[in-house]
Image 1: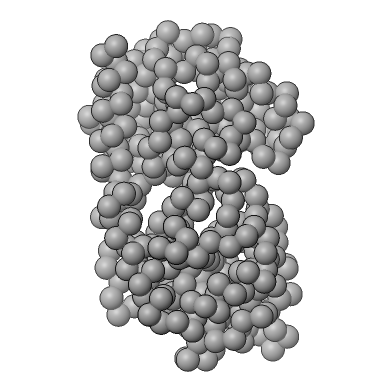
Image 2: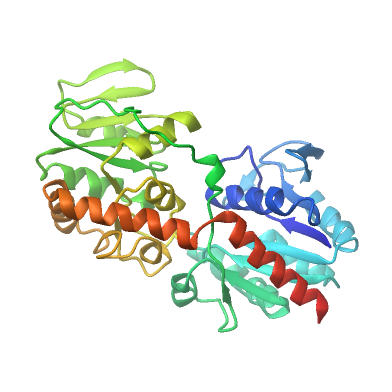
Length: 374
C-alpha cells in the first residue's frame, strides 16, 4: 500500500499538525510504503530518510500568510501522486488545494481536517473555492472530534471521526520527580504549556491567577506575548537565566527538554488550557496532562477542545475569555482535594481507553484498506 502524506511542514518544525503527521508516518511505516511531501520553511529542496521515513521537502522562498512560497512543491506533487495509491492530505494547506485542482490526481484521496482558516479571513475567502473542491474530490474526510465537524464551515456530513493518539511508550513513569519548584510549599501547582500567542488565552489566565490564593502558575512556552508574562510577574521576581523567570505566584519557563516537559506534566496538580479562538482545534497537551492523571480546565470553544477533557468528568470547562469563571474553576480544584483527584483518575482512564496511538493508527489503516477495496 503506497501512501503519500502531504502537509505544509514536517518535523523538526514544532507544531501539533506536524507532530501528528510524523506519528502517522512512523506508526504506519513498514505496514505501508510511506512517503511524506512537505515544503522547506525556506531553502533548497531536500530528500532524506527521517526516523526511517522518506521525506521530500520542496524548495521554498519563505512564507506569505503563513504559507510556504514554493513552485517546486507543485511539480513534486504531480510526479509523486502518480506513484501512490492513497494521498493523505492535511488541511488547511491552500497549496495542496491548488495542486489538486490543477493536476486532478487519480489516486484515492483522504483529507484529515485540522482546522478552518481562522485569523486570515480575507485570504480564507480567496482560497475557499479550492478547499471546497478538494473536499468534494476526497474519497474520505477525517476530523479528530465531532466538535471539528460542528464548528467548521467546510466539512461535509460524511466526515469520519478518528481522534489523535499518544504513543504510551513515549510517556515513562515519573514517580518521585518534582520538577516544578514552588515559592510556598503549601500551594498547588497550576501548569500551562503552549506558544504565547493570541488564541492560547494567556492574557485571560494572567488575569485569573491574580484572583486565586493557594496556587502558583507555571507557564512553559515562548512567543509574541512573552513580555506580557514578564510584566505580570511580581517586581520582586528573580531572573535566574535567559529561560527562567521566577515570581512569587507566576513562574515562566521559556523552553524545556522533552524529558523535563513530561516531568512538569507529572508534577503539576492542575493543567489549564484557556484558549480563546477556534485556532485551538484540539489541544493535544490536554491528553499529555491527562495521561499523568491531571484534571484539566479548558474552555467552551466550539471546536474539539471540550471533547477531549470532559466537563464534570475529567475537569472543568469554562466560558471562553471569562477570567472570573476561570479563576473560580482554579479555586474549586485547588481547595477540593477529593474532586481534583477524582477528575485526575478519570482523565488517566479516558486517555488509556480512547487515545492510544496504536489503536488509532490501526483504525486509520483499516479505513485505507476499505478505501482501496472499493
